[in-house]
Image 1 (cartoon, helix red, strand yellow):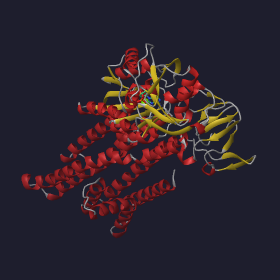
Image 2: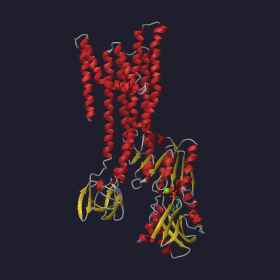
Image 3: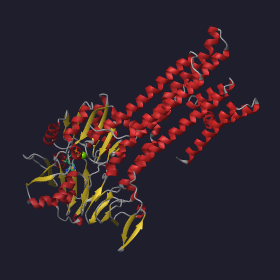
Image 4: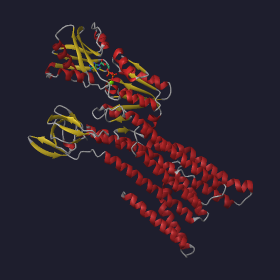
Length: 614
Ligand code: ADP
Ligand code: MG
């Protein structure tokens, strides 16, 4: 319990004691009144104050306004205990909500227990224990078994297995050795490793994730805006009903004013949408928290909602549906030797982080002298052009060859063909092969079973490769030879056809599409940077099975939200009808209200529980 919650509890207890004391006390008149008034103000001053402040800002209708009018009316009718009771129970609900929110926040914090406390940096041969913020890029750090890896980096020395569960939800340890990349926030399990840092703390994976999770809980505002929108219609409606009710009895039926004004006030009081106001954000919050425990980071409630309604799911190919790790299948020089062609390709690709580039560099394996390489520029969806040993080379697909005017020809072998040209002179090509991700077909089938109507693949790769992938995964449609801009227009085309469109990519050169789609989903973000910013939903690892899981988790959360709305409004409607007919007492109304709220909160907490996977 936070200090504030303790204070609230104290306030509730004191106010309840005062109220009960005044009720049973033999005192008469002024003293009794004073005790009720003290109880009322103690429990309700912040509600009254909030309503007044809103009034000053011209925002008339919110729950605090309803409660203030209703309780002041009750006081005016001489129902002192009832007025104090409403305020006291309101605070009980608030307190309950506070505890629920901090519980789910704590569980997120626990699972997000990835913030490294220190880094052991090696400076001039001496080990120094410093805070991770103080380590610069390129410094050497030492990580012992059992320690959290404080910064993203590359293993210089040693081998170990690491646990990335806190980042990805995947509990299987990963074995890493020299030259492999380690991700901050994972836990070093077995060996001592020396790591050269590749980012400063602020840019590290762990810092980005923490930032994202923190802002996800702030984005609650979007849900609140839903409730505010709701209240904007609901509250005036209820207030008008109450006025009509107060006028109806005396003017139409000729009955006494006091009876009908009281009915109207009870009506007003019961109509406070507390259970909704409390439980809706809490459900979303729980859903987001539960998902992040599984390595699915959802940036806000509106993103969660959007994923539930996705009808078209569009995938990038390389690195998303396929592993993005190519093996070199064949080297076909038109000029030069195979080794020379490979050498040029690797040198040109050595600065690119595209999967094609990384695979070619890895296949080359040898040392590439950086001083040979001059200016390099990468054209997304095409390839790279680079100055090597003073000459300009282009390495990429057929479209890039067309651009530089090199007379290229296709290859009879299946696979992605990487062409190489010097100026406009065609030098030959390298054929590389990618493999489908494990479980890709199963994930597609499950998405279909969850009601995704169309699964589409967009790729910059050529027709043959795209067709083969689409067929073996059973996709509904594919488009090949697209530039990143074409991918944006393809996604826009589907957006125009109605229904929500999700785009799933690896964040490498598809950031514009990620942000254009209704729901941008980035996979395998534990390494990549751009993805976390442009996506709405981030899957920490690159396991495609997380996708149907994310959809199911979001659906359950939304189902809980709907249950709560229907339940709360249903009970409200019954009590409202009873109170309009004069069949209920204010106390029943109050208890009914708080009861609904507590049930709704408990239901909301369900959104945090793990989902049984089918
Ligand atoms: P995808 O749409 O499958 O993710 P990209 O849009 O990233 O693919 O790239 C499309 C095509 O452009 C690749 O299949 C490859 O032919 C070519 N390409 C892109 N980047 C490079 C690169 N760095 N080196 C060589 N070819 C590249
Ligand atoms: Mg790509």
